[in-house]
Image 1: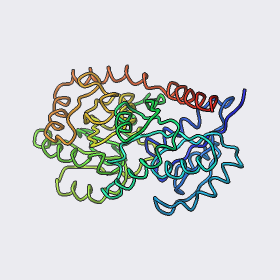
Image 2: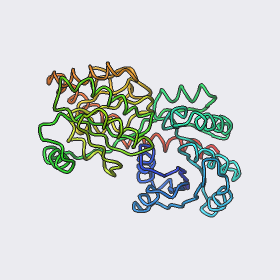
Image 3: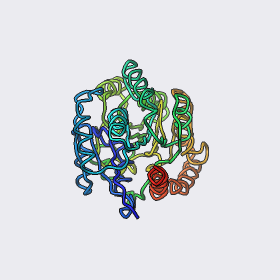
Image 4: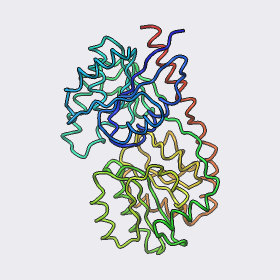
Length: 370
């Protein structure tokens, strides 16, 4: 039986949900059938992480989002490695990878992790990305999306041969939650009796952290011991820091944290107030940590969190509704316990093993019939 060489291409300038997804695939693919390779288009932390996991990795630096100068080198290297299939993740990767695969005469597939229209701070940048994606979509043999919501969105702009494969989550050990809770609260000087509302994610408009801050302002008079914990970094770091200072609400803005999920036990409530969300892998981590969830009913989130069962969902941008949902869980311990128990039973349905097997099935169908 033939072994195929699979090349994954991604920006790699940060380590977010897409990067975690790619690393899980690279590590988990059946080596008897597939040999994985990785190309990063930004010289960032993800390339180092992949190398640490013994993944064949090469950096083809794009100086700006539309930079095509690395294309000849990428094609030449792919030919030397005898790449059979290119698998792209993200706008830069889609542009370079789809063109490179066409040039090399090999198939390419794309995984769509998020809504392109909401991935950029600038409307102009979003328009350019959407236009380029629409132009290169016909070069893609198959398109994988991480939620049914994204499948419908991509189909609406001309995507074909679509399949939904949910992100998978590896089991995380939270064996000593009390120790972790105390450790991080001590590290960040959060009082032991503080009521911590926390979130994890890139500090970007699409993640909606500003709405969590506004909701906390509504909640503060009723819960004077409230403390906000925002884990992550991004273009809104300074803006959110300034907004938090103006509210006078005690807060911790940690910056980037490599294993952010380890800090989940420090939270009393996990809030994901996204404006747009492909799926929300962090929700599965919160379920494992046993932290009750409030999230926006947007994108793929309702496919992960069932409203009233695994968490409480509110319309995106509805600050009053967000505050009311948080208050409901805080003041009703039985509700919080019920949501946690249901979430703990639900998260295993989104397994790494299922994600990998379904992705391998796409590879096999495409390559064996090519």
